[in-house]
Image (cartoon, rainbow, N blue to C red; front, side, top):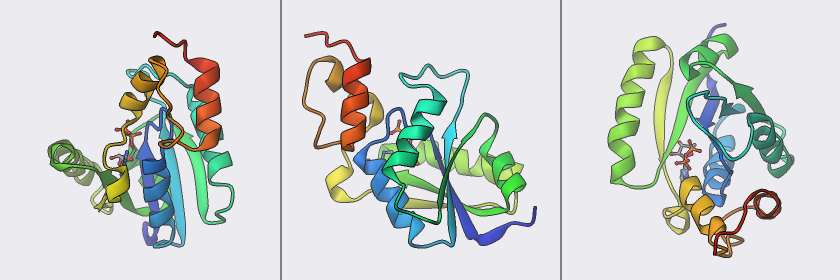
Length: 165
Ligand code: ADP
């Protein structure tokens, strides 16, 4: 499919979705006609939630947005972009440490799909500490994660996580 610069994608694991994710998704959605939020279904990564659960959480959280479509994709994001006419891929960056990895990933994706532009969106200052991995760890030790994730995720985490302390 021909790539359109008006169609963007935001791929990630979203295990679980955080307020930081929701913030860059909402900001990206205002910039493009259509935004695909692509839930990676990566067999090499062990996730707390299945791809279906992560997709359904995001669908519920983002249900007010007509131009956002949340999908699961098991393959390479460059391939998803090619198949769906996506011209822009957005990646959120929190700190300088994110940048090295993201830059290499952008180079790889550009090689796989030369029509795809990769753009980095800096996190909002209030979310720069938010990481899904840290949230899972905090929840496992019984910390209150409600300021960091949408209410639905607080509930899903409570049902899933066994508190260690
Ligand atoms: P993580 O597990 O590190 O939270 P994901 O793969 O789920 O990462 O992230 C999907 C996208 O969201 C990535 O581009 C990532 O950099 C971005 N992201 C994650 N957390 C934040 C945040 N707090 N602020 C901005 N972008 C973020």
